Image 1: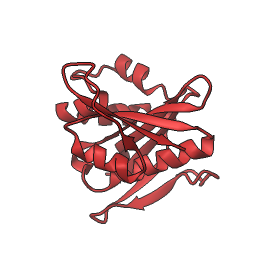
Image 2 (image 1 turned 90 degrees about the vertical axis):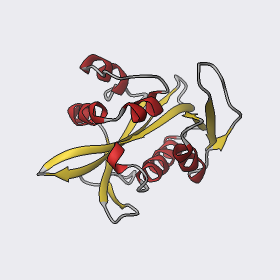
Image 3 (image 1 turned 30 degrees about the vertical axis):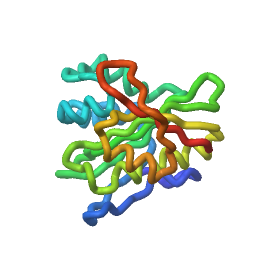
Length: 178
């Protein structure tokens, strides 16, 4: 485990069920761990993360999506150790605009780790990191059917705006001023 940095990472959180999860910054060395988590997600979890059907995630898709070496991407990974191997159970990220003042955020939690408080912990850490980085605003899009992520977003300070219907389904935009 890496030493704690001035931004509070890595650190361990205790979830509602007593499980402990390590949250730390993700880097290029985490690609395979994250790729494995994304490949294991249910179709529903993939849809809720990408707001589109994303059934067959290829390595090339994952490389484009994760961009762990891009300076505009801040990625936090939630890790548990299973059989002496690190396993990703969640990821939260934001991508900043060119000016570094605005970011779009997203979070995904492995199916078997949902509804334990991990999404709230990751999103809270992500918002805190955005503040430390000096961002002015963070926004995210949520599927209106995903009541869990809307509750999580509101818990960490996001304000929901009216539905947007830009596709065959409805989504909410959530924003937080920092």
